[in-house]
Image (cartoon, rainbow, N blue to C red; front, side):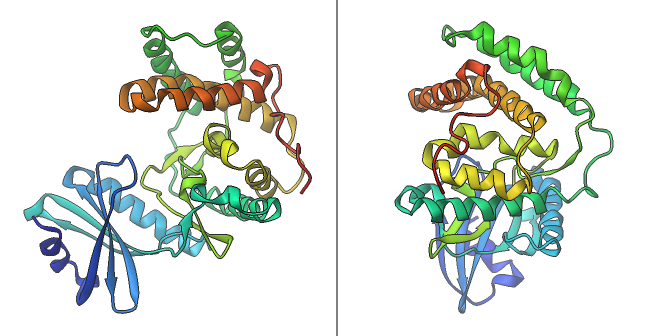
Length: 306
């Protein structure tokens, strides 16, 4: 079915004047920006099999709006059986992804964007009511890591000082026992932070939401955001944690960073092999920042004056 025919079935988009397809991202969903009058809307088209997950996402966005989180507002979620599609209509957040230009801003502006993002992330993590009560976080993370480790060992690539990294992970799994369980964005990084007029304007893309340890939402600092903007990373941590981060935070932060080194190798080899060299650059930054996990707190934290 043509996109125009799909939109003709959506009540909130009656009288639209333009449609623009969004090409960015790894999701199999089709995404569009649709203009109706003076307003723009973000449209996500998913296969019908994902409709239940999309309806949950829709309700979470409604809850996040009540929580005061700056993100897309939930407008309409509907099923088009004849097209085998789940359709979600959201408000459009004006601005640009921070990873496209943040390094051009002053250190203070980068820090302030991070500070706002950290405060928003804390609001997101205040949503407990929707979280399943049966999650065994430690066991789930062990199982997930075991899968990636087995896949990693099938490949010829070997991490430098691999034994130190794997020993650090194995020796610290116990920290994940009885962690609090909250809503997770689960892909919180500069590419999903929208900036307008050099200030934070919202976070997008909750379609990969999950429930788990709130500290897990920091893994993208080491994996992605750190390379773009250290001031942003410092700001995100300081905005989230009202007092200085304690030793437990840093040890768990380092644990997730170490675990994601292995999963990043496996995922990139399987789904985006042309970016493998780039992934290795990011991984080696993590290893240097933590001195191969002799350090929990990364070297970059508070390494520049703000």
